[in-house]
Length: 281
Image (cartoon, rainbow, N blue to C red; front, side, top):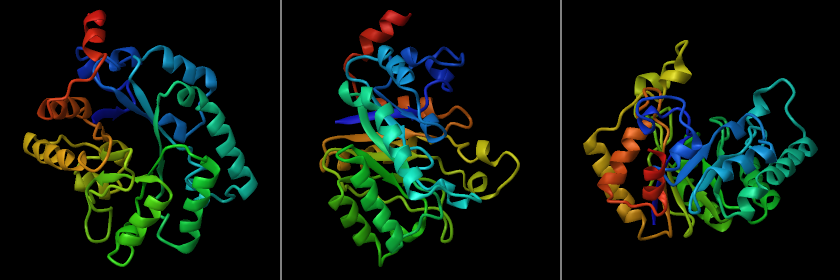
């Protein structure tokens, strides 16, 4: 199975006749999954999660990003969390997403670690602790530090994630010898493989201008690039039950058009969505 989605639902005018914001109800008429990013900044309320469920069809699923304190983004703060405080965030987070789990709407929890989360014994142990604290929850791991991909570490990284039943996120982003991580199409989980596409805007990604955070994903994938991606996806689907592709290249509102083009190239037809589109217009 192949699924395609975007980060957030509100910022994709291509799904709403050029208008923005886009409702989740509208979004769910076109694509079968969405990545929730707001959870990185604050754990969502259960009432909010239940409201999401009311707006999506039966086969729709959510990827929800782990909170920043679960991925140690606070280590650069003057006073980072201690172990007990961090464990409490895990507990609150698990409680908040329980409706997704009960209703079979959780595809995976995305742990996107910061660039300074490198391949060390301490961080390897932390990954083991993540599995322990998250029990049997589906988890996808996105590394942003190249040390996990060094030739001396790459195989052990893959084996570790297989052992812990984690999905290793396949990342597409600008990269050079010193920055970024490589596009590494590996399968570590037979149930789910995730590809996250950040675009290939090398200048916007690496040069920290005033508007860097808005410019870094300013990129539109060409038809040729999407066709090459489709070939990779078709190979990966032979090794895993599901390949999910998430487009995050949305500074110029290109994510939705790119996603819909990939859906066309892969000749995908998502159950429940066609009838839902007709009911909206």
